[in-house]
Length: 355
Image 1 (cartoon, rainbow, N blue to C red):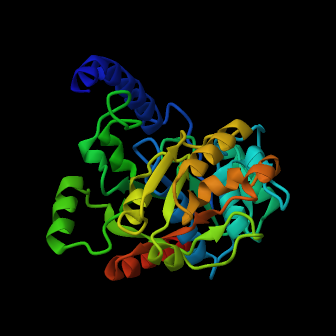
Image 2 (cartoon, helix red, strand yellow):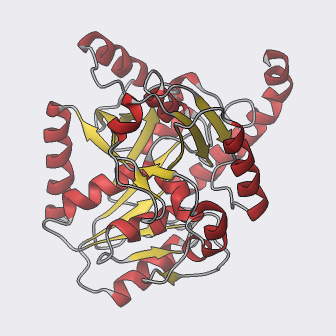
């Protein structure tokens, strides 16, 4: 593996320099960057996926929607449509992408839009919803065509950007110098208890600039929810843990470490079946999953997937295969440590109120 990284290192350097030059052209205003007269919050990361952007956006929606009209704008990764699209009640993951569909499912009264061209997307949102007071840009840290008023950068506790390198040697989309564009840095997926010394160590590793705030968050797992309401009985997740169920973990996400760690010592066995991030499942994929499930030698067994994957698995063409299986998904929420929560919430609300 180290030998491969050495071979790929020159490619990473060239790629990183190209991205660095692109960013400089935006910094020098040679490439145009649009600023809107409305609070725009960008949520993104330096690495390729897996830092917890979706639950963080949901946290911001819950926080801001108590006082403001909020909209989200995503690229709509994995969708089969093009251009600007406003999500509706009948929208599917193939039309708008799995993450926007997740936002729509949880917040049906909130405008959810997708567009690869973010400037056009914001203009269309404001045209359709003139009373919107804040727009959340999903996965937009590298989208320099918009100048957000507030930029939030996420980094995974177990895969800090400071210990990574640019693609393809590492998982970073750009050199770590890009961190300076962030106003807020959130270390995500931390342990439930974060010791003060560990907190200080991480802050020293991040080396925040004077204009940057650093916060720490962790994941809270909800109850297991059936993919189909019938015929699965509504038992709590403790029911399955107490009876030592085997779990076939079906995922199509970038990073499964967090959910695997959560299930560790709770399930009797974990059988991971992994697909690439945003994978568009096929009937053949799920027939193979069913075969693997049938080979598990236990009467106490379930299939568990993530909330994001559930958005794609709910496609009607999979119903004949999945409806008869005990398949559940587990929703997650972001939670901040008490001091971080108060300070983060205040910073976000103050920004939107003053702009």
